[in-house]
Image (cartoon, rainbow, N blue to C red; front, side, top):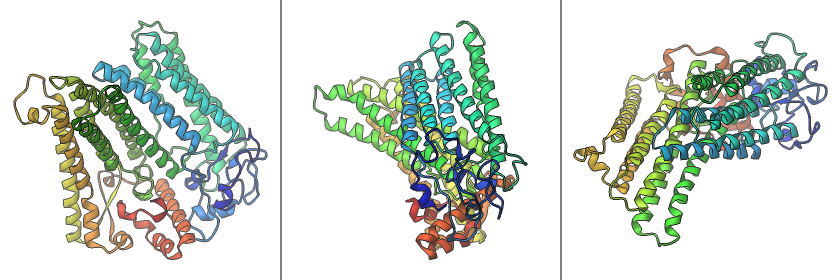
Length: 562
């Protein structure tokens, strides 16, 4: 089945309560070089319809064509692509999740610091979102049962967010444990249903032509882990509020949710990248909305002054600079160089970095709210809580973004002279990030009685401190483009650069890459080249020629991804 046919497929086709269908993008890592994809239990490759008699590929047909497209077969052949990386239901879940994050931010704002319960509750909310994203990037979620499950998860997140102010030894903590247990039970039922539809699948899950066996193994693993998690939360709920074991229940529950990326079954790589980016941008948007919400009561009675305009513009500018620092890895990072497709350990730390980024962006937003209140109330001195949360949050956000970037593989030329130029650019970037992180962390830790000195001079008032942080952000943006500037100076276009930038560089380049992940990355590159070839044969041929030597650069972004 062709991509256009799949995109036009009605949501109710195959039955409103149909069995789970595997997304085409989630099968690239489980198919062999020329084998056909297994469409559903007991169905031969090439037969149509994955909705009758069991789960299958969401497109529902054309197994041989899909195997060829995924493995880099005929450029003009059929290709399988998902409908849209982020559906409206996914977007609604993202909004609810960010609302829960903002409730944690409000608790941090009132407390003036991050407590262990805040960290634990934030991790629970993030893991609930991760569970939903994990399912929706592997299976079709357009049927009614998936919509119902998403709605129940939204209810759970909203209910849990109302108890964000509670400590570990309160009834509010018990309610959050109940929310986590409820979502775990939902995913037990969801993945048990997947196992039921794929229960007749046989063969080893690592065989290239047996998608269904991988799905079955994945469903069993997730069901068992969610059962263990639900049991853990049930034990926690049964404990008395004053029981000292309650924090340990949260630790065990969080650890049970940790997964090595792509352990049994890959997901739709580009859809997962898009979901991460959308969640982060929504969080930035909610932070900006919160700042304006804090300022609005003041402007209901007085007209804004130029200083107040400048303060709000600086806050918006700072959030925009953070957006520019963030790496949208949907297309800007070649799949073969992406942490998730190079090494599973790198992928695990990549996910931890994304969690830290969301957490500290929330902390930064809380500090900006306090700073806005202080500025509009014309406080005589800069509050310590605002200074700590803003400077500490900014420092941690910059470090988290740099940490995420370091998980990917960079490419440098083999020419010694050109290689040195790229090394100088990368060393400058690292030194700049470490310097900004160190200075802003020191600003965060500066005591209120330290009124003298250079750092104290940078924080005499709110506008001055925001201006300094904006300056640091602009400086980091300029340094982050150094490798692109070197590339533009040395090479005429992206194709020429990819031909010469082939030597891996970076922390994880010292470790061995995992062959199955690299094969999946190669399939993604060839599938993208095939799509480009349909739009422009010359462009698609160029991408296909250099798919084994892709590099991490903004100049490598395809036209379709802009």
